[in-house]
Image 1 (tube, one colour):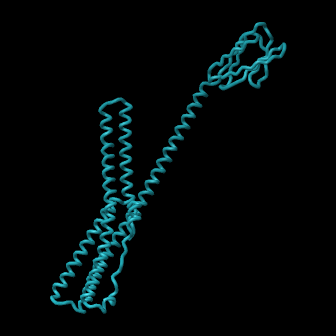
Image 2 (cartoon, rainbow, N blue to C red):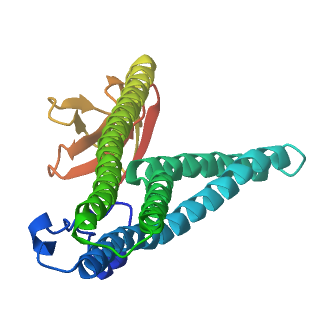
Length: 312
């Protein structure tokens, strides 16, 4: 008998699996006296039944505790998820109402996850499955004990060799009945285990698809934002540069923008229109002495970058 996946590791290590030890063959009791053979047969059948029932009763305890804990936590989360949005609507500022609502939604999500975890690991269903199996084993054992006692009472005389075979058949029946209950319970466990795996796969697939949709929506949002920003920048168009030159004595100047060819200039204000937005270098060179000055202009879209240069 396998250990259910819902039991904790400590329980698994501490309690071995129940084994289906078969009743000895008929010829083992052939040379015993009737009384001795009856005692051995009865003891073997009772021992087998007790080991199986004890294993299930011990296994039920851990599943019952886990199931009750899950139900209590799920109920508290459900209660929180239902009450918090109602309390949020009764008053408080907008931030508090939003926080209460979000906490309520998160509580409901956690309650759903815990419920699905119970279905995947089979704590509650295992508890019910074990209870059904062990109570059926108890009933089978009581029936065996009553049938055994009925046979002894109806005999009305000391047992003889002719009684060995009927008593052996009674013990064989309880062995077969308990083995059948164990086999049926194992089949149910396998079905639930496969169902839990299918549910887990569905949840993983659903969450992956949800994450992919969220990521795609985020990418679309970023793309739309970038395109809108680019469109706004483009709609503003190029800007211009305005340079005020302060000289102690009038000089002939040559002024160039970035790598463009320099042009001669004389006066107080030099301007350049239709300049692409961004950083640009304005280079001023005096004709006598060929002294060079540089100014960095940051041209805003559709705006004017104003600079001032003092030449001693």
